[in-house]
Length: 335
Image (tube, rainbow, N blue to C red; front, side):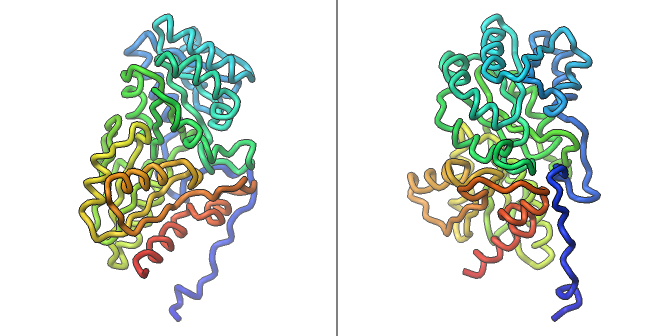
């Protein structure tokens, strides 16, 4: 056994207060959503921001400071938040309504559906703490938000990977006519996609890193993890292709089918969401409908209420850390 294999694993911190998803030493950008919305507001006077008493925790406070007359604090009332956003959209504004993803999907669902989506209103819902990006337990972990919203007509769903993509998404969803639900990484957000010369394209999936051995179809935070795993496995002679799917609805079916049709590679979906009702099930259904039957599996969160704790501990426990992604890839290459 090598000396490297004998090294003890670094002890994982167990405080739920540690909420950063950035690795030690990883480049980050502060509050990319808030700064991108500020830049957009300088070009488009119709942009307004709304918060349900969480502006500091969705990075909307950046926008509120520079645009106090375009910021509306709705208090701890998510249903009111969505109704007010709908009214502003009817008057020609482009409202960005921000809260936590659990509160948008669970508390305000009916109001989003009937007040916004049914009339295809131009409301942009920006939701922080998606999936397992907080250690505060089931009350704050939006592990099922994509599943909840995927069946809502007219609603576009986007899950950005990093700070660069968040900055690029904001002007494009503002230009899109209709409601959008965007999962938000906030605070010190990792910067990953810049090294791949990536440019976000609304509604499009893109191969970030090509590889002949296995295909990972990923979104959001798990694209970051997939790329980290791919870079490390490349040193072992394993070529991992990473297909990033930031727009989950409508799904870029053509690109996904084209990549899977290249054949001979196991296919893994990867998402910071329950394996029930998310990207993985959407991809699996797409492949079956089109007669494609690769070796297929899903990387995602279990169908369970998750524990509270520190994110590094929880990501390891629930299989969405970089090491866990690497292990899953190796397992499917051996089978």
